[in-house]
Image (tube, rainbow, N blue to C red; front, side, top):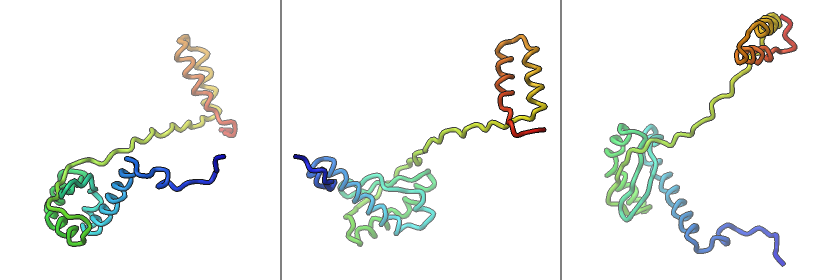
Length: 151
């Protein structure tokens, strides 16, 4: 019989590849936090860690301007991180990678209610129009009539 008792995620993952990737992601996140402690605030808002391989730390900057500023500090950063015994680095490489844009859904259109006078004018115009498409459009527009508007 199976137990409905929840299991810890590390027990489910065991020594799998996913477990190794999660561990690597955690260490990169920790290193990113340490990096942001070492660099000045305006620069920290425009860079992030991409990867670390062997003795090279690869950073991403939002634009070429921020990448240049980060490159000026690369040697010092490698030394500071090595001194903290976080990682043993020889070099820091900087890449330009714009931040991933989150596409927002276009804002919903507001339907502005129309006055009673305009409602009647649109309905009258629709009755006199012979073009069916234009007639339908005028009637849709007239349907925005708000019953509480008495002007």
